[in-house]
Length: 397
Image (tube, rainbow, N blue to C red):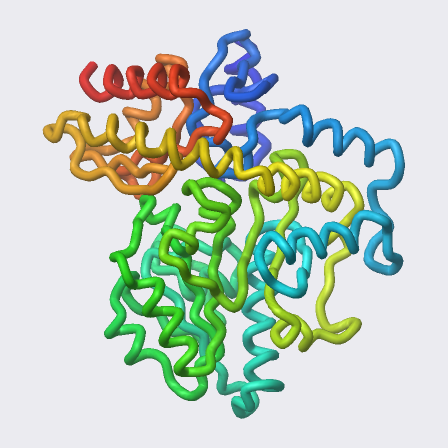
C-alpha cells in the first residue's frame, strides 16, 4: 500500500466524511506549489478558497509568526497584548472604518455581524423587540453554523438541521425589485457577497451592489458585505466592492487575513455600529490573539503596498482572456473578476478536477458543474499559462 493510500484510509476510517477531497495527500508547500507524500509537485490553483492569497509559507508572514511565537501566543481577551491595538487600528484604517471586532473563522465573523445588526436595530434604529429581520440572497454561502444554514438555499448545506433560526428573508441574487419588496421598517441589515464564490463565482449585474447600498440607506438598514473570499486583493482591488465604488456599513473579513497560517476573521465597521457592544455581550477566547494579530498586521502591511492587487488585476485580465478562448462545446460560461474564476461546464466538473490533478494542477469543483480557479496572487504569467494549458488538456483529453 502506498503512503497516500495508507493515509487516505486512515482519514476515511476515522474522520467524518464532511468533505470530498481529491485523492492527494499534501506534505509540504512553498509559494505556488505543494508536494504530496510521494514527492509529486502540484501547482495550487485553489489557494485554500482564498486563504492562501499571498502564497504558501510566505516568508514575510512566516517571519512575523515566528517572531510572535517566541514572545506570546495567547492571553485571552482578559488582558490586552501589544499586538491587539495596532492590529485593530491598522485594519480599521485599511477598510476606512473606526472599529474592529476580531474573531477566528469566517462563520464566526458572519454570526457576529448578525448579532451586531440585530443589537444595532433594537438599540439604535428602534425596532421592537424580537421583530428584526435580515435579508440575504439565494445562492449565498456565509458558513455552516445552524443560524447561517437557516437561510441557505443550498440543499446540501441546509437540509436536516432544523428547526431553523427565524428572522431572515431570502431573495434572488441580483434582483433589485425583489430586494426592495423584502426590505421593510424592521429590516436591520442586508447581507451580501459582492461575488458569490460557492455558488460558482457569480458576479452580480452591474449596478446591483450600488442599488443595495442605496436601499439600505433609504431603509436605515446596515449593508453587510461578506468579503471573506472576495476581499484582500483577490479581485484586483483590496475589497471587491471597490469595483462598483460602493462602501458598506460593515465589512466581514477572514481567510487571507490570517495569511494561511492562523484562523483570523474580523467585523469592521464604524463606532456607531460596533459601539453597541459592552463588556461580556460578545467574545471569543482566541479571537484577536497575539499570534493571529501579528500575522494579520503583516498581511495588512503587504496589502498596503498594492502589489498583490495590481498583480491580481493585470494577471486576472490575462486569465479571463484565456478562459474565454476555451472551446464552447465543453465550456458553458466563464465568470469572475481578477484572479478568481468559475468555469461552468456542460458536464460535471469533478472528473475535470481529477484529470487536472493527474496533470499537476490542483483545483476544485463547486455546484457540480463549475470548476473554481483561485491561484495564490503571487503567481506569474508563465505559471498561470502552464496551469491553463493543463486545463485545456483536461477538457479535451
